[in-house]
Image 1 (cartoon, rainbow, N blue to C red):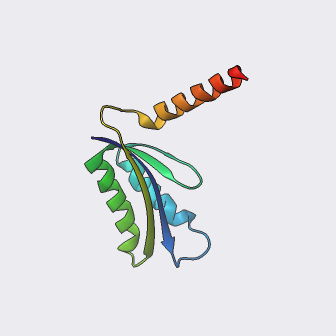
Image 2: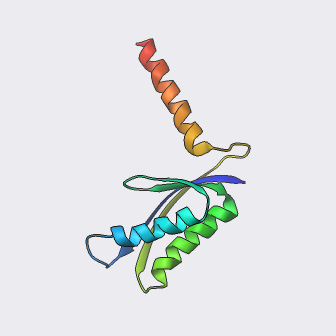
Length: 104
């Protein structure tokens, strides 16, 4: 079943700057072949439930297996019958915003 998640994985106890560790996590996501996009706080990943959850596990344990305490924040949207939610949700929102602005 198609799943869209917002994922934040953060290593704890490695110092103030975590971009090198996060870059390795993003590499795992990219190598998975799943659709994803990253912003300053989360990475959205879309695909089949089992594939998405495997990537979450792989990312988490890439840090934890190094002995790094790892914080994971995950939000999932499972909507049967829908695909391309990462882009289509935004398209619907932008359309609604435009309609609201025209109605003013």
